[in-house]
Length: 432
Image (tube, rainbow, N blue to C red; front, side):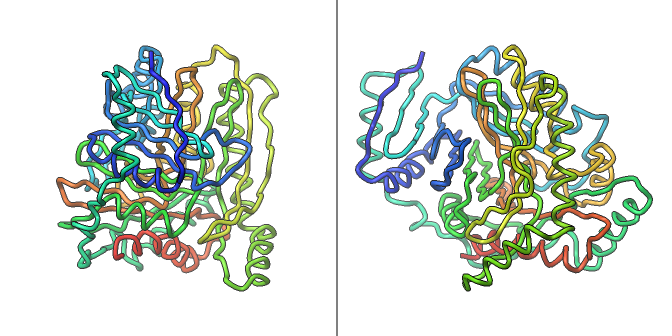
C-alpha cells in the first residue's frame, strides 16, 4: 500500500523545478512534463517517479512477456522505457548497426516515491515509508536545492559529428525511393544520428534548455545509473484509459513564423499539403490495423484526421485514433501488438523495418522507442522518443537522431533540410 498526501505549493513552476533538482540524488528517475498543454486525454500536468523499489531490465528476447509478468506481479505504478529494438522480439528481426550508448532494451522500475501534479495540487504517494518522510522531503524541496548546473555547465567544445554524411544520405534516400518504386514499401521513416564523443554535459541543465526551446506536451527526463535521456517530444504514442485506447501519430511538419499572417498561412499550407496528408493517412491506416489486434469488433475509429497543432518551434499534423478493448485484455499485449509505433516505421510495417535496418548506420535504441508508465489499474501513457538527447555518462557519449518519412514524392534535398531543422533544438541545447 502507498501512503498518500496532498500538497498545494504557492508557486507550482518553482516547485516543479525544485522537484527535478531534488530528484537527481536518486539512481532511477522518470520525469514527465506536459508543459501545461491540455487536451481531452490529459491526466496530469507533470509526474515524477524516483527511487526504485523493484526493477526489470532485459534485452529484447521475450521482453514483452517478461514485462507482462513484472507488471502483473508488481500490481503498482511502474515507469520505464521500451527501445525501438524490441521489434526483434515481435518479428524475426535483428539490430546489427553501431550502438555508442549501450542502454538495455527494456527498463522499468517501481518507484518508492511518486509525485503527481495537476493544476496547483501535488498528490504524493510513497511506498515503504519511514516516519514523516514525505514532510521531510517536502521541506527540502520547498527550500530549493542549489543547481549543479552552476558548478558544471556543458563543455562548450562539444564537437558534433554526423554518422551519415550528406552524399551518403542522398544515396541512401535514393535506395529507399527505389524500394518504393519497386513496391516493397509505400513509406518508411529514415533516421540519422548526430553524436559527440569524450564529452561531458550537465543533464538537468541540458534538459531545461531543450525543454525551454520548444515546451512540448510530452517532455521527459530519464536517469538510471549513468544513463540519461532528455526529451522534448511533441508526440504521444499510445494511452489506455479504462477500456479506451488512444494513439496520436504525427506526420507532417512545417516551420513557424514570427509574422502572424505568414504563420497562419504556413499552418494552412501544411493542412492542405497533399504529400504530408498522404504520409499521415498511410500511418493512420497502419495504426488502425495495429489497434485492431486487441480492439473489440468495429471499435477502431479515427477521431481527428490530419489536424494541424502549433508548437513553439513547428506546426505538426496529428491524427487521433481510438479503439475499445475488453476489460480483461492485458495492457502489455496492446503495446506489443502496436510496437514500434507507426509514425517511426513505415508501410507495410515489416518490410519497412527490414529496409530501415539495412540503410541506417546506427542502432536506434531508445530513440524512436517510448517512455511512460503503467498505473496499478492497468492504464498507461507512453510518448514517442523524438527530439531527444541520449547520454551515457560513463562512456562520455552523447547522441541525438532525427528522421523523416520518405515517400514516392520525397525530394532528398528537402528531406535532408528537414532533418537539419529538427536537429537544431538539440544542437542549441548542447552548445548552450
